[in-house]
Image 1 (cartoon, rainbow, N blue to C red):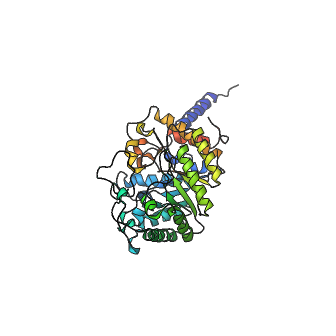
Image 2 (cartoon, rainbow, N blue to C red):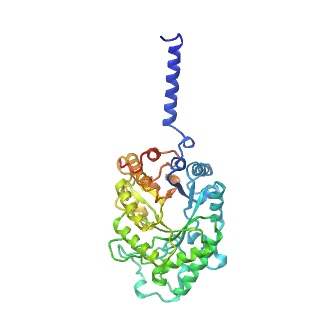
Image 3 (tube, rainbow, N blue to C red):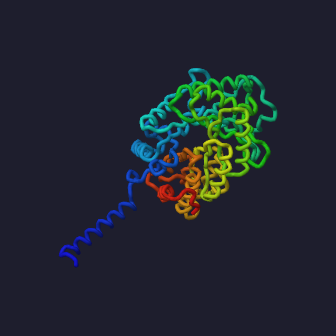
Length: 416
């Protein structure tokens, strides 16, 4: 039998339930679940951060207020960070000589991470892009075949250059092998040595594998042309000298593609046979919404034969219509990869893709100690027009965020 106040009690309880339901549907970012807590028994969950976040300063598209919210989101959600740009050669060592370093932004990154008890990753020491032209310059005339014409033929691979350099890359007189090796050694010893014991992992060599179906294993970069294929082994040796305790990674994109993955396996097996101290594989995972559990599961399964930890280093999922034809990460191709508006049902497809690949990560958690998103939210993403991340530009969690959180409680390897 109901008490005299039971009707009012029922109404009050119903109102409370409704309010709780509304609150859970329209929750602010600061009330969300935490990625780092949800996956604490599986792997670290990290993000790349830009200079504004590391220093707490506004600028460009982000006001000081928005940057402060970005910083709060990083602290709430992640336990590992990577410097998006400020440890690349172009930014940290723009000018030749001992006085040519600029450590201020990188120091701010390290201080930010240490003050919030985060695991720090350095990105990157040797790369064909975002390397200043002076690194390759010398007195040796380049081979005639290496001098590109003014109008680059369609599909012709580009070398050197990148951010802050000439569009076609450096084509002038070149350093000798010995000169370039000395510059590499100085750079690596100086940068890794400065952060010894503080930056725990380094992307030592980035994107050295050739794209496409050809038989070439290595990209035709200036590092390869001037030094030879042992430039990779030399870079790892120098990094190990500078910090014997750091985890040294080889990092590349498109490893979801079987052809590129086969080249990776060939390269790493060769390095291991030579005793090169490569200690982890960095798989960037710049993928699209067509990427499934099966695709990622197969990629991780094949890479596991190398016997090395697999770090997912630059995760994002492109929802732009123009980015659904491949999983490349070339900077010069990024514009076309984010054109054409969004794919149909972008939110649902993004959620499905993230759920599938996180199921694969959980299934392979014994080999995957770290998953890093390439950016905090869509507004600061290098592919912002492809809205590829779990948080929108106002740091609100998207449906894909909830999908990823749900996966953390599922049985490992659940395919759907």
